[in-house]
Image 1 (cartoon, one colour):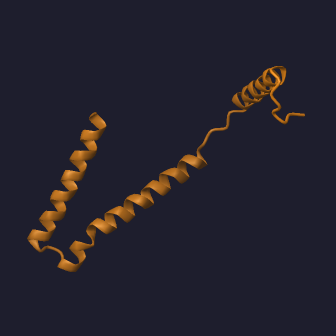
Image 2 (cartoon, rainbow, N blue to C red):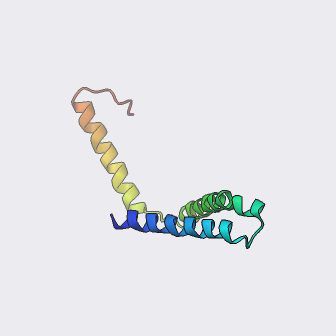
Length: 89
């Protein structure tokens, strides 16, 4: 629930700043109306950057890969004993 409140408060602050810029006429009106679009595009770029960084830093776990292969072999053996054709060698 705390995370929802953080997101809601952030959106409220951003909306207040945008409305303030619209009312104060600090920026040209044509630029101010495009700020939400710029914000959404920036948020999308940030998200893509974080996914890319996460993929570059993704740890490899050779021990876990071996355990997974053993679990798969065990499951195939169990299903073969039960009479299920799993297409194994």
